[in-house]
Length: 570
Image 1 (tube, one colour):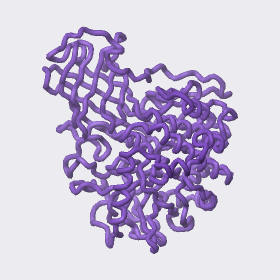
Image 2 (spheres, rainbow, N blue to C red):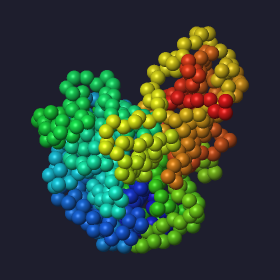
Image 3 (cartoon, rainbow, N blue to C red):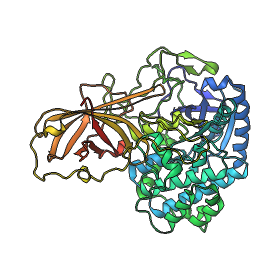
Image 4 (tube, rainbow, N blue to C red):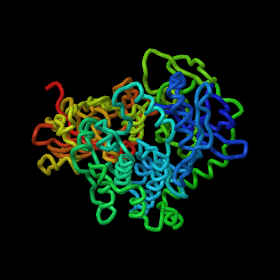
């Protein structure tokens, strides 16, 4: 959680604000407290939505419907004001991390926890569908893990924005690549079965630590969702069968939420939660966050420093994508400081600050490992890549795919939605080691082999979630063991979003076919502040028989990225 900045409100409706949880493509999220002491998450929409009367009308209807859901496994909608200068909605605050962050930090959940998770979310979807609603965006970052059970979040605003866009654009569909149902990707009419497909993908991710559909680009990823079977790894037994049934291509072949809940937890999710459902490390993390929450007090006045631009997506240093994520507050380290805005703020409707400038970029806060004037970083945080996908949304217009959240995507579907022509072949299979693709001499080298020298470039994929991870450029130079021999740059640059992470690596070991290097932030090349990891981890490069270079990173904080690079410039 970040402190309130100059120009931000101290109160929204009846709620005193404790701090800013973050912001995303839909709005800004604050942690607040009612006069009676209840802690809430207050989401304020972006000002440009407030100018759309269709959005306001839809927002009012969606919030009213969300209030009626009343499911045990959702964050309840407590209050809202769709008629405010800038509309807002308050939901119950859930003291627990998003599933995406929990799996990235602690690895896959044990089977019983996955079953409890699935049963709770299925019961939540049954309540949602019972109100005639479809969530449309069930994904790991919209699932929170609390001690008293899972919660499905992000109701109201997301559906209102989705529906408003549909009123003005033909065939618009909102969702997240890899978690959208095939019929949703095709732009066909969807039902509650689409949510069940998304839930199946979420459970596969929770159980294996990787998304069931992996691809080097959004186009490849979407093609696999529509035409190929899911990758469920080592998942076995009844849990595998249940998850596979949710991921059926035909909506009619998927279980209903009620059936799914019974299959996963015959005694009900509540009974499983009561028996203790989270593994020990997560219990300790959630408990610490809940205790820290008790010490928070409303700010009398925000500090006088530049605000995070309201009109752009922003993300806190803690790695949780703030878009729709009402996770636990984490106090920033004392060395953390906000990054000054690129241009002076102005005040919009309701006293909420706006930003206007020559371009649209990520506005960020300083990362935990950064200091003013030292914007260093290595590789894109895996949660940042997820947040990029969520903030930009996955939008299909008619039959044209506009889901290239990362460079290198692009595909078209046939008009009759029949067998689509697959995108250009790219390797999405992560090698267990570079040697899988090239056999070489076992003799250890003391310097970089000549076959590695030069510039290499290619797209990356995160193993932990299957999302694209931007484009990696690696420049190898001559050098001996222990010396810095490669400079790397990982970039995302699309739809007005530009993130650049720079690193350098020293040779630690290798043969003439594969090298292991120690990667760290490049001290001479600044990275995009707050959006790049700063850990020191090993990376591996392996020369393949086809002349390409296979790359993989051991850095879990970046999502264990991997990919295939080709030589650039000959």
